[in-house]
Amino acid sequence: MKTVTEKNTATFIHLSMLTQYFIPFGNYIFPILIWSTKKDSSEFVDYNGKQALNFQLSLLMYCLILISIAVPCFLFTIFNNIPFETIITQDHFSSNHFDFGSNIGLITAGFIALFLAATIKVAEFFLIVYAAIKTSNGELFKYPATINFIK
Image 1 (cartoon, rainbow, N blue to C red):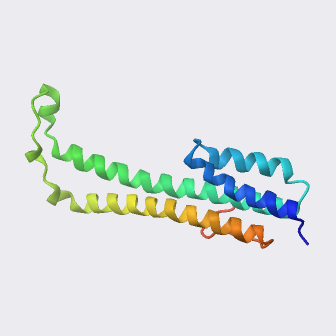
Image 2: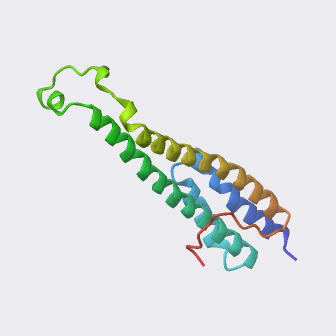
Image 3: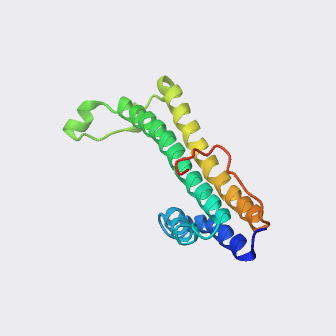
């Protein structure tokens, strides 16, 4: 039987990840602070703290991979369409130099990667709220597609 204090602490661990919208890196700092202070007193809090941190680290890795795909796609498309002489001589650049038809595959890959990254961030919000609700009811919650960095 989990106590109300354990349920509340575990719920706050999950909800503290929402501080990322107000404080940079709050989604890492606050769950680590809460989890590290209470992990020894409760197995339930320890489990939920690990789940929350593993989820955030997994999302960071997924988004970094997607961004590392999107940025080169867009940069290659842009620099492939700008004449090098224009850059060196600092001549006026006209947008009629762009031929997106020849790079439609790269542009599509870039937009798909950005769309997936945005979808991950939206899903993250709803999963955090869902995890907080489950945890407040005393249930164990495991985030989907999470890599166990912290065991």
